[in-house]
Length: 140
Figure (cartoon, rainbow, N blue to C red):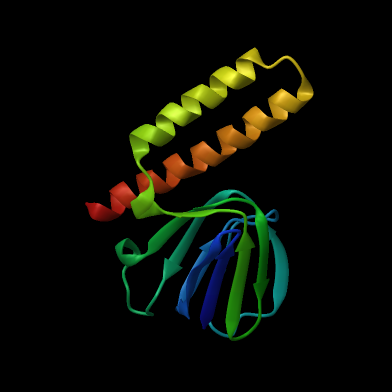
């Protein structure tokens, strides 16, 4: 099955895979070759990619994705998101510091626009920390 992971800055993945697990508005999904066609809303969360059928769980690659759209047919998956940060590129201490700043922004927000912006930042950095934790677990 072919995966295209496309962000605002370009193509993050464009290759053959065996399985993808993704967060959607209806709940997490896993897609394998021959999956029924669907289109779903992607929500911020961890996207997991298994490249070969026999690969163990700790061989999966993880990406922290923002919201977007997932399109599936029987031979391909296309994930269109604003951002997709590879787990190996996430620095856990920086994401934790950014999350702390976002929580402070929310606590000090004076209007709904500031609250909404802070919530977006909180979601982004919470997902990044989740993916960093998955990456750390993978290395054990």
